[in-house]
Length: 582
Image (tube, rainbow, N blue to C red; front, side, top):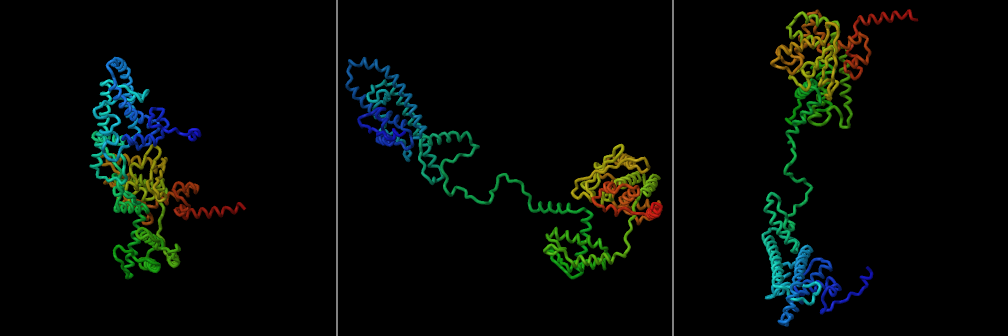
């Protein structure tokens, strides 16, 4: 590398020619020499390619001059020698023809740039052509002897000339195509772009292929102007296939549906009653508000409302607290704040004090008595139903419902419906699987299952007249027989095939309690769950087992256990008998 840089390059003598002479010329000297004869090369070509272009064009010009001089001095005596030499030169001409074709391909691949104008004269000029002269045939240069070249045959020279003419015409057509595209285009290029043989060839190829791909987008033929480039923005552009987005109305409906899932149907009903009572109190108190605005609420109004509920409406302490919970739910849902707390999150001290005072004042008042339906009472009810009290189907349905509610520790709302039947909440036919020795009952919703995961209760058969499996098998058989053409969605139905309601069930149970000589006003739908807990305690079941059977998550099950006077009497007698143990 050092020798090549330090070596003094020998300058070319203008009288010299051939590979030996051009090998010492620089790229700039070769381009300058080619430019003098009308060949302008703006691309970056290698020294070897420039040398070959120089040899094929400059030497060809010298050879044509030498050939003309030799042809004028030729004598008749030397014609025989020239004819013998023609055959060898023809073969050399064929080889040179192939070499010229390869040279043109190489020149096209290396992209020899043309002048900015759309004529081909920059490369080939009719007046000053490196290949053709007026009235002369072009003879290929002999690589072995670039200085002296004998005339070739007319056939060989004519073939090469025709090939070169066709090549020139093809290039001229390509340039004309590019000129038409540039003229018809509406785009104004911001930067001047030189046209080369390669760009002309690609433009012609894309024009021919565009007719066969009409469904494809036409490629850009030039650079875009600043006005045609879309400005960037932080806002997302619209998509031709946007994702479905729900409207405001649809979201509001879904939000209301979620609020419905926040509390149970019965709790929501009690909340609505409490809010209505508060609104009536506000109107009686002289408060008013326009539609769509928030009703007034503060600690003083809440204190007066509690006093009004206790003294005027004669509501109990638990009911007033339930009404306050309804007011809280209403304001949180519609107005987004807690009305029973201060802005710092502390509860109203005065409100808590008044609620405690109401509870103390009502402590001496009589409570509503709710007695349990124990196993003894349930046995008497079943015996009464076996004697055909109402109808065959109603008696079978009530017996199955009473036994399943008792042994399953069910709440009345878990096997009956209140209002419109809801298959997502109420007990459906598909939720009960009656097997030979047990019943698998699935509760979709319950008090201790607020997230509606579902709970499966297993109720087993026994060898008494209170067998829940046998009673349910008889009921299912009658139901399928009577309502074969009208399948019922609800598991328990009345005589008309409608879902069993809470009111229908309690009315018939109270009628049965009256028939067996009990005070029906002391019992309600919750008496079966309370009776099952009481009977379990009498049977001396362990506390954790009672808690598991009743699905209780705390020790509140003890509130369902009613201790009779006989149990208290036996307990005192057992305490008395311990005197002999000391």
